[in-house]
Length: 367
Picture (spheres, rainbow, N blue to C red):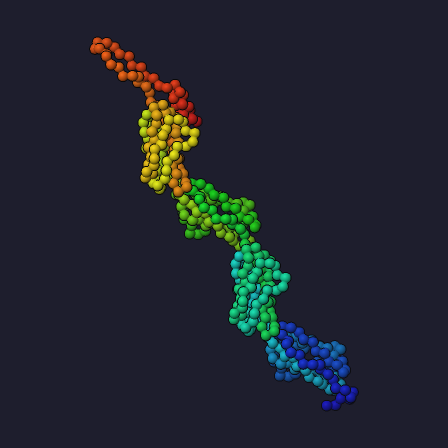
């Protein structure tokens, strides 16, 4: 080698632990006026930039792997150094549309022997499981929201991917004890801009109204029975709540033309295991007997008059029917000792108070 300056150029110490996808700095000295070049036969994936002041930058591709030699030449003399590079592992594509309360899968490759960790400074609410064969699971809390970064590390090199997450909306607590023929309120929050829908496969008999401010009303038919699921969806994420409903029992048709001093039969069905009671505030003069097989008897006093309401209760739900009653007229006392050829007088009366109640009941029905 012809070195006219009397000094050999210096390429610097060999480098190890270089990762694909990163840059390395080449620093030549004695003198600093030399030039860097890549040695012929290097593995693919390394590009040497221009040299200035003895310094050049090598850009390694993500897939760069192996031992790379670089030559520093100055004043006709040269020196060589090597950089041992390991390919950058692959963390996979970024994920968007993740919902709080769900899990996401992290899949690392090239190689599949690495480990996943969460990046420091992530929003709260993400837990990374152990890694097996390059795969780990991230569990997001219901309240998780924001951009989360996860690092896949293998052979001392790493790659990062992100998961953009939206918090899970809140559909509210499940409801039990709902009766057919009534309405229930659905209240969604976090945020209140979502929409309510009925889950496919629900039992028949539930109609969901429009949602406003996160609130919707469900109307249940009299025959509605079973567990109904309703979905609250906001920002692409959803939560589900259930309403357990029992069908409305059937108290039967209202009765009119009942007379005081007589009995009436109350027949409840769907199911026939319920119980009859008199509604508070009924007019006086009605006594309800015990219920058996859904049937009870009401005894009306002679003076009973007005509209009486009776409640049939089964499985915590009720139905009501009415009986309109007219008081029994008074024919007077029996007469004995009447002789043939004479006249008898028949005087029919009725209780003035009962008559007033009857008139009031008729007026209420007309109203």
